[in-house]
Length: 447
Image (cartoon, rainbow, N blue to C red; front, side):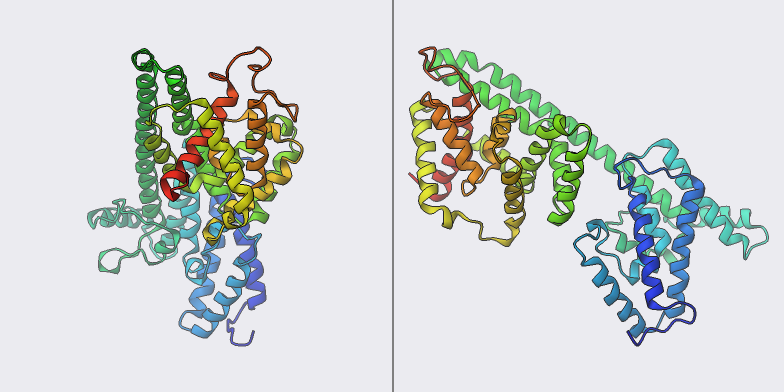
């Protein structure tokens, strides 16, 4: 470090303050490191704004000194490249710090859930900050504040034009180069958030309606069963209903959203989150939910594609149960012969491989937990190249033949001298067939 030039603070000292500022931003996202809600009242919000004002003043003193800016950005880049650094703040830079108060405000507005008390606290703090700033330069500061808001409203600045990411707030200005104050920016952000919530609510309503419609349509399949005179048509229709109901369920969709956020972080971070869950008092009760979260994380990026694939392939005439067994058996044989070629080749799928490897350790000698989850989720999430897929499907085939190699017991058909038709073993084989065998046949022409 040799080109940094600031009259009052060294680069090393500034970096220490930046690390403290990151901790404030984490709390501004709504939660403490323990997972509990972060309490934000007007006084605490004003203290955070004062931190932001400190950084803004620092950058005013080095504005125009590009060498100092470049050295600071290089130091910040080294800080954010640490695998333990919060991924939501990876875009931190001298540019964001030069508008630090707006950066804090953006995080506060995005807090989930946004309670009435939180909105009131944010607005009270922002109004007080703007008034304090005017009080230093205006005698009739209250009148000046109201006049400024009126002016910005007339110029259209009180509209809620989208600001896609925090970096964009750095250059927010109005017509005639009028600077937007904290109050206006807060109102814009709250309006945008209300619009997003309204749209999400509409989507949830539509998904609920779609799920109920599919369930009702499929529940009428009994008549088709009688017309087709096929012994498995009605049963398979019920499995399709259950699968689509799970894939489109509001809880499942929220789980997909949460998994996308959690597993976007480096493995070292999301593994720590899961380890904290294991150490909690409810660890045993949450174990299956943790496994479900991991399985969803494997396929969260292609959730829509999985639904589309299932819908497009689920209308084929029901096959014989022996065809299901043979199809899955051939898939296992293909896996054992071509496991190396099945390994992931694309870097974009590295995340899936990390999650599966973590799952294989977590489920060592506990594979029976997979039977506690949706057959559709288990089948869709386990890639054929994984050891978990081999263990899972091999156990299914063994139980189909009446053998039991673990303490898992899906049905008693063989013991009762019944054919496998409506039992859980066949439903799980059917899901594996739908998500893997049919996919291979349609995409790779495997016969």
